[in-house]
Amino acid sequence: MEDPLCPNCNFILKKLDSCPLSEPFENGSMFDILIQSLWVASSVLPFVIIMGLGIRLLKRRTPRYMLITVCLVIQVAVNEGILKNLFKDPRPFGACSKSFGFPSGHASFASFFLTWLIFETLYISEHATFKKSKHYLPLRNIGLICCPLVPISRWFLNYHTVEQIICGSLIGFSVASACFYYLIEKGHQAWYEELSDKTTLCETFATSGMDSEAGYEKPPLIKNHSLQPMQSNSEEKIYL
Image: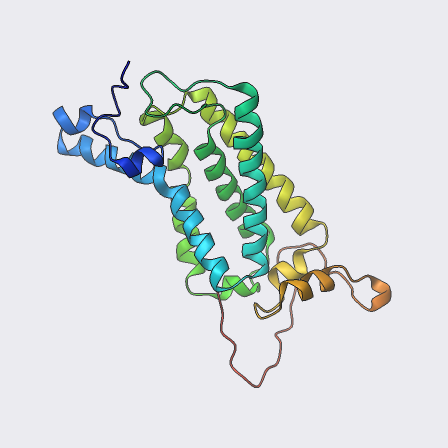
């Protein structure tokens, strides 16, 4: 039987599992079309974030972006590689996708990213290098507003049930919490927020692995610990 929602869907949106419902575009009002377009844009957001991270990593590999990427790989592996193949739960009838639906990958991704942004806001010092960028606050606020729309869009676009979305969101939250705890609060907070972006990844790990006998003292794990600015004769660029 042919899927009722698929024939008129754009090829790219099919590949991104973000096809809109056909009814609003055929018989709905302009408001219905705008709302449906909002759900489609929200559903595509995780792929936009992935592209942005990829471009940023190609340009400059900072500790922050390396950490986020590694943890996102863990989240995707747990959700898509393990749990979906373990439960093999189908999507709702009429969904324009034949892959398994439990737990929701989009909801898991959005929940992970939202949780990470919140933890950065609460636990990372305002003196952190990336927080000094003029682009940080606008992008963070956009993420905080748009990420919750992703799991909602998955229900309105008929790609997941409520149970699949809730479970995906819980998995994303759990993975982000575990990664942030072990990679930041267990002694890596200093190089995540204080070291210059010009420090290489090898130097970063070497610094984070130094013990007290080598003359390195880990900073207290509080948000607003005082940091002395580095003196430099040349102007340093601040990167997001």
